[in-house]
Length: 221
Image (tube, rainbow, N blue to C red):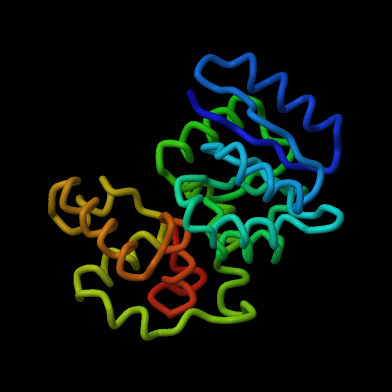
């Protein structure tokens, strides 16, 4: 069972999401919050697998709530999906940079929302939509605090190459084909790179690739 928390200041939207998720086999809503402060308390109490997090809320916005959740060592297994009205939003980029696994626009089709929850719960990041890479490419080079290039010194040459390919949006299977290695080997390289640079998932590797210049806007297909 995948346990989901809903965080949005619009009660009607939360009700719609709850009805959709609770009607799906293998998914259940374990709590709701109407602002970021209550969201942090909810996540610490309920320990959901996935949080659907609105970015703009009263008292504490989704960006700060995401930062607090991802910084908590007791919540490393909780994944966050940002909900936003606008695709290209600097706040969404900052949330991904803080540790969110990706984002969805609020008018996403129900089937896509459910698929996103399952994907993130299984450890994948929401990086396949080209808009996510556009978002990162748009804001990474002018983010408030660029990633230190020293992070790359922790990586082997092959791991740097793999991070660059992750930054281009390639899956493990596609990386394996590009490097002529097995998918298991590609996955191992990705996992080791994530550990060395302290990334929660692939989304943070994509941000790192852009911020350190391994990938530049316009390179991604």
